[in-house]
Length: 278
Image (cartoon, rainbow, N blue to C red; front, top):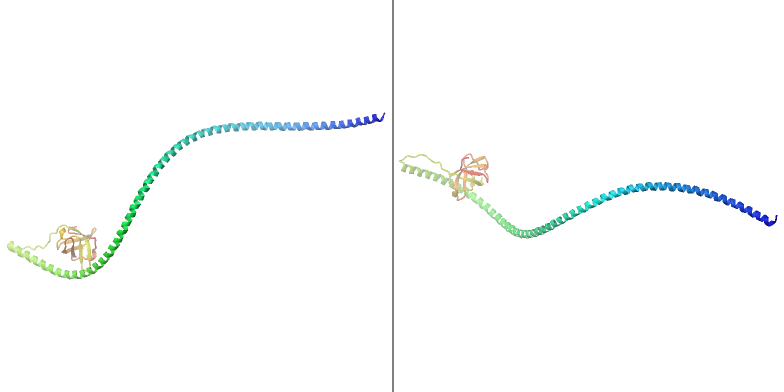
């Protein structure tokens, strides 16, 4: 056998070995690819099944969403209706607010006028208070002078009372004597003792109690029918305080002294006095 032939045989042998090796690798790779394909197919099948389940779940959710959308559309329609009502109410409230604003403006104008009037009145009141303060000062001075005069008058009144009591005693005696003379002259010498005074019904108030002079002054006098000798019952509410015998009478006031058993210490200004029987 020639050398070329030997070389060719060797080459063919080598090629056969290489082919066999390549064929084995290709077969192993094909098996591997087949296993991977089967594995991928199983995974794909599982994924497809999962996708089908997900599709069904999504379809359910989609139906629920469609129901929710329907409800939302209904709610939106109701909201639109409510919105229209609200707009109407807002307009009505706006109109009412406008009217109230107008009324408030009028009220503010009135208040401003009242404040102006009040300020003017305050100014007048300040002037009046000033005059009143001056008048009070003059009144205080007059009261001081009156107290001084009153003290002098009390002394004179005490002296006058003593003189008046004596004069009254003489007047009563003279009047009694005149009555006796008149009765003796006109009735043939017959005389009946009668000293009771017929009193007119008079109601009065105690306006002054002079405990030093033992006198009580009431707010009724000659113009109201009060006469010297009248007996006034003095009381406070339903409480009897005593009796007064009128000793001196002026036009609108009279003064009296308490009768036996009565004290001026129980009486005060504001007590009631009356000739009526209580």
